[in-house]
Length: 315
Ligand SMILES: Cc1cc2nc3c(=O)[nH]c(=O)nc-3n(C[C@H](O)[C@H](O)[C@H](O)COP(=O)(O)OP(=O)(O)OC[C@H]3O[C@@H](n4cnc5c(N)ncnc54)[C@H](O)[C@@H]3O)c2cc1C
Image (cartoon, rainbow, N blue to C red; front, side, top):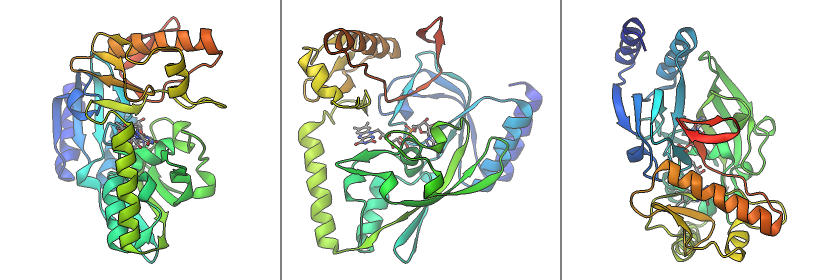
């Protein structure tokens, strides 16, 4: 970014009480604990300020990427040369309106579930253990244990890449397995999500939530950094079953390993690089495809990784 643009961006941040930081470690902001530095980083605290930043990015052709909790991201070892817009704690308000909750997009699903329980509202229990923000969850139509965002969302607000605000109702969100309007519209940013829940009994909600948490603890390698399920569920089977059937449990490249506990998770055993993860995933894809005929698509979103002649490379 040239000096003139940097000054402009600093002025916008100052006007909206946001900090512009430089050289921020992506490893520290992704649950995989992988990735080099992002050149610029802004902690977003208002939709208005975000709109101004997007207008600036549009006019100055500055590259940007939005991060929530970073729990579904694989970041390049070389980092990201653009601007990261982080929608986290500073943008995480939750408001109740009858049986609906209007959530700023940086609110964590866990906190929304807690809020719902405190207000005797049921419907968030199965999603409560997904370690991401509601913005990231809507982006991918996150789901667990037979529930998905699609079941509860009624409306959302978002900003397009020129900073204009729009509202979308659920039926226009195009929600399907790990797919939404937003996966098809690059650079749009969800600012708030409205979900509709049902009145319930707080004790039953608490018991159900604890049961789902226990199931995760038993089945998933939660003591290692990861991005959750690394491969999408192929139609007609399960990624973890196919990988297990191919004898790939425990297979590793550098510090990246197919979890012994859950074959659908690639874990970082300590010093995995992005290159390690990609090499491991390519091997798994090849073996599974040769032995079973299924192609396993990757679920995490790539940040700072580019494709060269059909080959994925960390740039
Ligand atoms: C241990 C573990 C368990 C998991 N279990 C599940 C599970 O059961 N089910 C499931 O579906 N997922 C699961 N995940 C994956 C992940 O938690 C979800 O996909 C989550 O919804 C991602 O939210 P996030 O805030 O971390 O998004 P990020 O990882 O920060 O971002 C993911 C994508 O969403 C985009 N994005 C984020 N916020 C916004 C926004 N406000 N507007 C527009 N785009 C946005 C980003 O640009 C990026 O493309 C798991 C992950 C881990 C580490």
